[in-house]
Length: 59
Image 1 (spheres, one colour):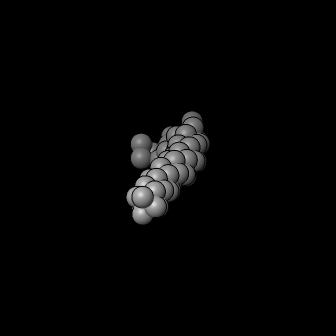
Image 2 (image 1 turned 45 degrees about the vertical axis):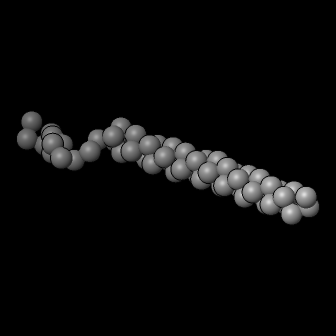
C-alpha cells in the first residue's frame, strides 16, 4: 500500500489539462473571429465615409 501515489491537491489532472488546452484553443479561435468582424466593420465605415465625401464633392 505504500507505493500508491496520491496526486497533490495543486497538481492538475489530465482532464483539467485537456480542458485548459481546449479552452485556450477556443479562445484563440474566437479572438480571431472577433478581430475579423471588427476589421470588417471598420472597413465598411471607412468606405461609407469615403463614398459620402465623394458624393458631397460631386454636388
